[in-house]
Amino acid sequence: MAWVEKRGLRYRVRLRMPDGTVTTDSVHDIRADAVIRAKEIDVEVARDNFIDPRGGRIPLTDWVTIWAATHQAAPATWAAYRSHLRLHILPALGPLPLVDIRRQHVKTLAVTLGRRLAPRSVTDVIMVLSMILQEAVEDRRIPFNPCRGIRIPKGIRAERPHATADQVAAIAARQARPGDALMILTAAYTGMRWGELAGLHRDNVDLAVGSIHVHPEVGALHEVNGKLFLGPPKTNDSVRHIRLPRFLTNLLATHLTDHPHGTVFPGARGYHQRRSNFNRRAWTPAVAGDPKRGIPPVLTGMHFHDLRHTHKTWLIEDGIPEIAQARRLGHRLAGVRGIYSHVTEPMITNLIDALQRRWETTQPDRPDSNVRRLRAIA
Image (cartoon, rainbow, N blue to C red; front, side, top):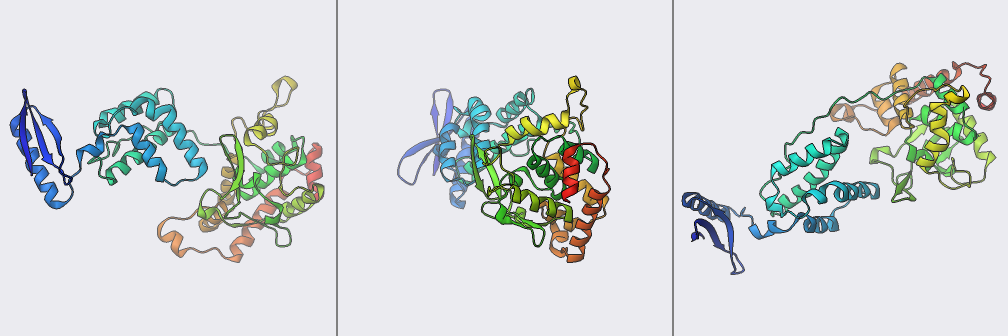
C-alpha cells in the first residue's frame, strides 16, 4: 500500500517493496496530486502492472550496456548501432536516468541532428534510441517509450539514377581490368548486391545451368571495422538462384578459366575486394570521366548500387511479372501477393531472354577494346 508524506513544502509518495525496503515513487507540489498517485499505485499493484521506480533510475549509458549484452543483430548492424550510440545518442542523453528522458529530449536530439545529417540518418539514429527505450518498457523500467510517435521530416528524396544498356557497357569498357568490367555487367544483368558479388565463390556459379547461387551462410562479403569476412546475405529472401542470360554465362566461363582464385571477382592480389577501393580505383573514374583529358561522364552521381535499380527498371520495361522481379532481387512481396504468386519456368525463360536481347541490342561497333573483347567471348 502506498502513502503520502510531507517533505518540506512538497509531498512524496512512498511505498514498501516486496523485499521490505521503502522507496519513493514520486514527489508532488500539491497534496491532492500525491494522493491520486498513491491510489494509482495501489491499483497498479493489484493488477500486477506496477513499475518499480528504482529500475528506471539507471542512466541510459548503463542501460545500453545491459541491453547490448543480450540483443542479437548481424555484425554490420551492430557496427551501425555502435556508431549511432557513440556519435549521437550517448553524448546527448547518456547521463540521464531512463525515467528522466522526456519526449522533448528526443525531439531536441532529432532537431539538432537534422542540422547536419540527412533525414534518413536522423531516422536511423532515433530508431536505435527507440529500440533501446522500448526494451526498457518491456523490462518494466519505464512506463512508456518517449520516442513513440515522433516523426522525422523526410525532406525531398532525389530519385536514384538508372542506366541504359549502352551506358552500362560504356562504364564496363572503361575498366582497366576485364574482371572489373565483368563484375559491373554481372551487377547490371542480375541485380545482385555489391556484397553478393564481391563474396561470390566459383563453387556457387553453375555454368552448366547458367545460374548463380547466393549461399545462405557465406553468400555475401561484409566489412565491419575494416575487417572483411563472408557471412549470410542481407535477408533470408536474399538466398536464391539467379539464372543468367547466355552471354553472361559465356563471359563468366571464360573469366573463370583466366584465373585460379576461388573468388569470382578477386582484387589484384587474388583476395576479396574492398568496396571503397573498387569505387576509388574503378567505378568513380569510369562513371565520372575526366574532363581534363576530354573523357565525358557516363552518368553523373551514379553509385554501384544503382546497377540494382537499373536491373529492376529493365525488368519493368520488359514486362516481367512482379513476383519474378522480387525473387530475382531477393525481395518478398507483402501480403496476399506474396502468398499466392509463384515464379514459373516460362517466367524465368522470358526474363533471361529479355536480358539477352537487351545485351544484343547495344551498339556492336564500339571502338573500346574491352567491349569488343567481351562481345567476342559472348
